[in-house]
Structures are given as C-alpha cells and as structure tokens.
Length: 192
Length: 115
Image (cartoon, rainbow over all chains, first blue to last red; front, side, top):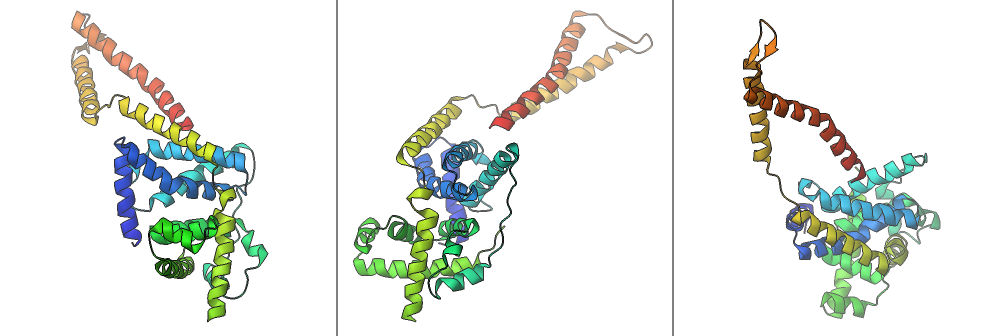
C-alpha cells in the first residue's frame, strides 16, 4: 500500500464517518487515537495531563470538521496539523515558548540504526520520537501492526504471528521487511 | 551484515518502545471516556437539522430583491419612504436582517474559537 492508497483509504473512512456510521468512527478511532496521543505527548515533552486534554480536543475538532478532509495528505498528517495548532495555542496562552526542534538529519538517523547501539541522547530527543510515530503511520498497516505489537507491546514472535494470522516463518519475514521499510521510510522522510 | 541487522532490530525495538510504548499512549479509562464522547457527539450532530446551502442562497436572494423593491418605493424628491403596510413590513424584515449580521458574526466567531 503506497501513500496514494493510504490517502484514498483515509478519504473513504472519513466520508463514512461523516455520515454517522459508528463502525467507521470505531475504525477511525482504532487507527488514529493511539498514534495521535503519542504525537501530542511527545510534542509536549511528556506532560500527560495536557496531552490527554489536547488529544480529546483534537479528536473532537477533527470529527466536527472531517467533511473538510480532502485526501490530499494522509488523515494522520491532517490530524497532526490540527494537533499542532492546539499545542501552539496552549503554549501561547501560558506564555510558554513554542520550541523549534533542532534538526537531526533523517539519513543520519537511518544510518545510525544499523551501526551499533543508538546513543541514549538520540532516544531522549523529542523530534526523534515524533518522527518514529510519523514514520510508523506511513508504513503499510501489516508492517505497522507487526512492529508495534513486537516492540511497543513487547509480544513474542509467536504472539504476533497469532495476531496477524500468519505462520511463525511468515511473521519473521514480515518483521524483517517491516524493519527495512521503516529504515527506508525514515531516510526518505521530509518534515513539512 | 548480521551485526548490522541485529543492531537495526535492537535499535528499532528501543526507538519504538520509547516513542510508542504504553507510556506514550492513553490508558483504558481515557480510551473509554473519549470514544463515548466522540460517539455521543457524532449522534448529536446527525440529529441536528441540516440547512442546505441552496436555501441560504435563496434567502439571501430574496432579501436582496426585497431591499431593491424597498429602494424603488422611496420618494427621492422628498427623501421619504412610502408608509403603506407592505413597505413597513419589508422595511422591518430588511432592517432585522441587517441587525442580525453583526450578532450572527460574533456568535460564529465565538463558536469557532471554542470548537
């Protein structure tokens, strides 16, 4: 599934949700609620209470203006745009500075992945964590599910295989392709 | 080559864990509350009356016609408006609509601010 297919799929999901289809809303929520929270949480530097509030506001605003989504970007990118405005409003209302991230080269990060253990300093950077969430959302669903279940949920390969409904060997192969796809996507990733 | 693949797996595991682990996601309670909130909102939106754009255009067009008719009823030499009943009714309708423009604008702005 390439980015065009993702956008088409997103547009169809958005249209079904707008008509009041609760199953579509459940799918929309299942697909985007967690990554959107992670995006907001890391954007705010890990302040959970604020993240939860902005996350709910973002989802509600998105639901109310879903008919404006045109499919020109992925739905996740569109949701992140709404979230960014809400985060900026919140920081501005508190007189806090809107921090610009220091740029870490994507190619450099992608190449670091395969050359020795990543330094702790890289792992703690907000922009790196945000980028990981965004890159995960650009992967085909099967790859994303395999990677998040294996590494975020820390499930065994057998458990991931059961979730995907595949054999152990096939799951190992999916995980291997998903890791390579993640690295490729990361090296191509251009921040808007 | 194998070392490089091992590093890729270890590093990815660490990156995904810190970026998308349980701490970076909402808990079950937050999920339940939020989904219910969104579903309720979706239902209330569906039950709200839909106001078709064609009707808005027709109403604006009618108002412009009424205003034009009103202008045609003005006695320009004496700068007076005819005081017949239809003239007064139309004048009231046009005036009320003009008065509601700033009020409606403020209401729309306030609603947008808090959406």
